Length: 427
Ligand SMILES: CC(=O)N[C@H]1[C@@H](OP(=O)(O)OP(=O)(O)OC[C@H]2O[C@@H](n3ccc(=O)[nH]c3=O)[C@H](O)[C@@H]2O)O[C@H](CO)[C@@H](O)[C@@H]1O
Ligand SMILES: C=C(OP(=O)(O)O)C(=O)O
Image (cartoon, rainbow, N blue to C red; front, side):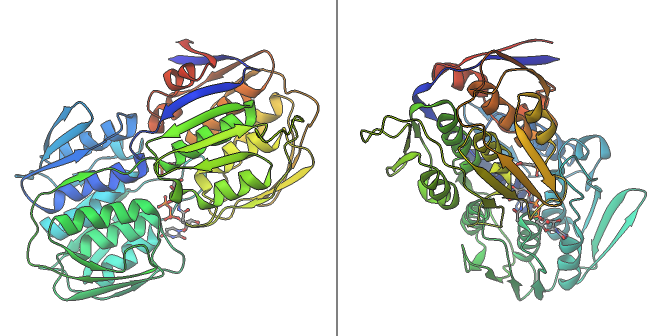
């Protein structure tokens, strides 16, 4: 097993290109199950999670081939309808094969994705949605089973709370149902827009892209499609926060600035210079407008469904706020246990206390954090430790970095390209 060693305290400079989004690639890969034939996905990030999803597809009978940044997935013949525990336990997004399998094969059996380090993560809304389309669902021996007695029937699905994978799963089941389905209070994350574009290219009829009300007119059949995965807004946001934390000037390329409205607004409020181009964001700290003093202001955040502040950037933003001037309240509304990074950040000298779903961060303005050995606990917590390590003085060693490899493509190499002293070494 490898670990990451960082000698912190160096500003970051240069350009960094953002990879395709993990959270778009996974549902789009699952969507290939809907139509027999060869699909092509471009800009696919080579990650532990995308490799796991390919294994899930393979167990269902699909064949695949990587060609540089593209993956060809042939779903002409499916030989199974079960996603086993061994794969699902390593990646919750495996649950996304439920909707497409139910639509195509009339039956699906997927190991129940358990609770993970960040919270319970139920899928009751997915199952309720399938039932509204005429399926029966149940849980036996740790597996979710969904069965459609014939073709699914369009219906109205209301989500109590906007669920990202729930919206994606029900959407994929509904595109070939008989009649019209309406999803009310749907999630609006850009990754859902990417999925809608792919389904539309496959022949689906969907109205309401980017809104919380999706209207799906079921079609008799779909065809394979060629689709490009959107840039990873969470990776882009991670770079912006890293530069704000270390100081320096970096242009983040191959991104969609409009996908990060809440983060760029918060960074500006904190005193960070953000300049948006068409597909680039330049981040500068301290700001270049003659301001000499390095003074990062504390700001509060509250995680919310898109376009609110993403829960997937909460841990990284906390790593920035521990160095700010003042007190920042970080309120996590999506997951009940997404503060696992707090104990590790404290090892670097951060002053953070937790009060229910809020973290109170007292910035250490004027003092530098001090590197320490820390342990990664989940994907975004790991990214926050990297950011804190880059900003701290001395050496930070991060173990259990397999979490990071689930969602960040070539993170160490990209940071080295920006001048960071960071290495991956055997633990
Ligand atoms: C809205 C939101 O920010 N979703 C995040 C969530 O997506 P993911 O799809 O994993 O989670 P959901 O969007 O479904 O969950 C959103 C909220 O709804 C609740 N819920 C969900 C399903 C259900 O059946 N019942 C229920 O109560 C969850 O407990 C949570 O509080 O984790 C991903 C990985 O960190 C993020 O990329 C997504 O941005
Ligand atoms: C927690 C994440 O992913 P997943 O839903 O795959 O666990 C994430 O992307 O931050």
